[in-house]
Amino acid sequence: MDIATLLEGRSTSDVVSCAIGTSVREAVALLASKRIGAVPVMDGDRVAGIFSERDVIYRLAEEGDACLSRPLGEVMTAPAITVELNTAILDALALMTRRRIRHLPVVDSDAMCGFISIGDLVKARLDQIEHEAEQMRTYIQTA
Image (tube, rainbow, N blue to C red; front, side, top):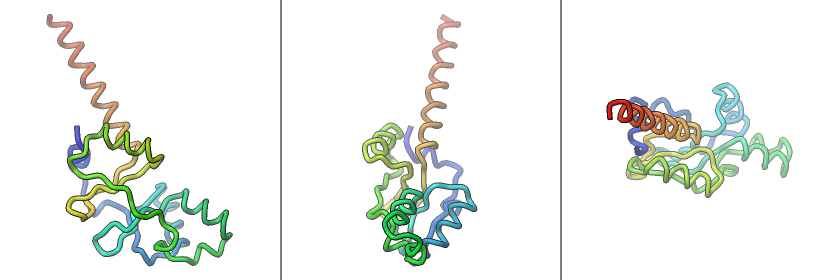
């Protein structure tokens, strides 16, 4: 299974994102109100970086609340690590594990077409394993 299959039925317009000039304070309020852990930071149609709860923690530890007035372009994690639509789910999981990240923008020709979390990938993998187990049970019962 690949990322394109995972994103079927989802619209790019459903992705919560922020512009590169958005203040940290505004982004934190958005994360809290949407109950999400990260957003892609956009520079026009291009993914410039990722802003996550970790970025908030690190900046607050370094600078105190002065960081809340800074634009995301100065505090985000950049460049963003991305995947393409044809990336296999297991490859995306391996990438997230290796890089110790929990969110990935999905790009197609440098344009963002989705945003996935490690939870999305784990759920898809578990669904796939359950489907395979059911097929095996059916095969055994009919053999």
